[in-house]
Each structure stands twice: as C-alpha cells, then as structure tokens.
Length: 212
Ligand code: GRF
Image (cartoon, rainbow, N blue to C red):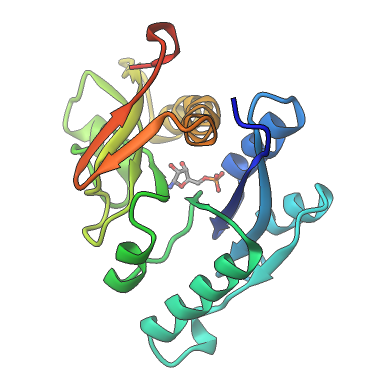
C-alpha cells in the first residue's frame, strides 16, 4: 500500500458531480489521493465552487485567452506539472486535447465517458443508446489518446435500459454508477495496480474488486 496519497489534477467544465465524488471518496478515506489542482476552462463552472469549498486550489484556463489549441494545451500542461500532479483526471472536461498533450501524459491521463465504449463516443450518448434500442448502457473509464473516446478501456459499469427510460432518467442512473466507478479506478492508480504497455493495460486486481 502506498504511504503517500497520489497527487491528481482534475479538469472540469461544468457541474462537477464526478469531482465531488472524488472529493468525498478522499474525505471518507476510500481513495488514497490528494487533489492538487482543479482546472476549469469555464469561469462559471459550478465544480469550481465545490473545489473551493473543499479547500482545493483552482485555476481557470479559458480557451478564449489563447491564440490556438497548442497554446491552450501548453498552459494546461504547465499548470498541471507545477501542481505536482502525477495523474490527470478529466471529469466532464469539454475540450478536445491535442496529440502533444495526450502523448505527453499517455498512461496517466484518464477520462470518464457516459457510454459503454466503443459504443456511442461523442455527445448525447443517453438518447443515442435509447434510439439504438440498446439493451444496456453505462459508463467507461479509459486512458486518453488523440482519438476522442478511443483510448484503452480501464473499466466499465452498466445498467439495463428500461422500457420507460428517457435520456434524463438514464443519465441519472449512469451518473450514479460513475460516482462509484471513477474513485475506484483512480484508487487502482494510487495503489499501483495499473500497468500500461503501449495500448495494453494490465490491472492487478483481486477478483472481487473488479467491477466488470
Ligand atoms: C459525466 O457524465 C461524464 O461521463 C461526462 O461528463 C459528465 C460530467 O458530469 N464526461 P459532472 O460535471 O461530473 O457532473
């Protein structure tokens, strides 16, 4: 078991319920991590308030203040590195990162996406799952690569789609799953249970701990 909590940076754009789940898991001693910085690209993101309430340093890095994506990504990278974070956690961060950034952090940059990837990358996943008559839907935590929602999968959690589900009811259930899954996967990193070799991921987990 690690003696030092894993330093992580969390990138958000909005409500920050996944950020809150991480804050709560750390507070409840279920996640041996320390959030060194919360970055938002949106100055009004509600998640910034959650971070401030928890006494976590915040930074707003607004894409509009930078001439191009490379300059924006460089600013993100500098802030993350200065914070001492060893893992970068995208939690509802609505910007696409460039290859320079995804390559630089490859293996220590994760995202949570609200679908059972490779099904339904991109937006409006809940409605798309209903429209496709999928039997189940869920959420995926994956390593981030240049291709959006394409990186190696670390874990998924699933729910059955019910006949009367709407995009909203499905979203509520999927987010509930996310709030357990994301702290769990980040805990694996904190416990050195994740080994990345190229596009292969090896998880060193006791059987009962793997939610798949
Ligand atoms: C989550 O559903 C996540 O899967 C997606 O964006 C949403 C963020 O929600 N990437 P929140 O801001 O954490 O509440």
